[in-house]
Image (spheres, rainbow, N blue to C red):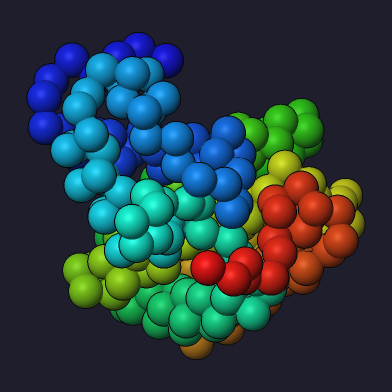
Length: 227
């Protein structure tokens, strides 16, 4: 990974550390190796510590008094509580999107859906997840509610490392694709109530995936460690 050339770019440092957490290089519960990261990014400890404050506000990092910071561990309850709120926001976004979506936005989402289906048929999971995420983001954007979008993005950062898990059974993957087919149909019909319910149920299905034993082990979802 290349060093960060500019000074005091704590947000860029935050982006780099966030990526390390989401990719699993910094695992849940481990201490943040501040000295190593400073050398790796070519920055002083000041921007790194400012970055850690940002990540703490996102629920990704815990700041330990006089002991640095560590990657926050997730529990099933924490993920469920977050998904409950995200589901409500996604449902509302679907209802609003059906009222306000433009023809151009509709066409772009449908094109993304076709790309996602191609990745599914080719069993390209990483590419599938990337397009899948863009579809959800596009529906949220079509809702045209900046406060809703900001709240959703803040919550999404907390569980992104498990929402797009590499461990997913064939049956759950197939169900996720079927859900997306129903989403597109409801969106084309501009049926806000139906799309809202589909989006809420879709996130509930994601919680089932996270709760599987294999995913728990892979994502290190453990009980909150005592400080």
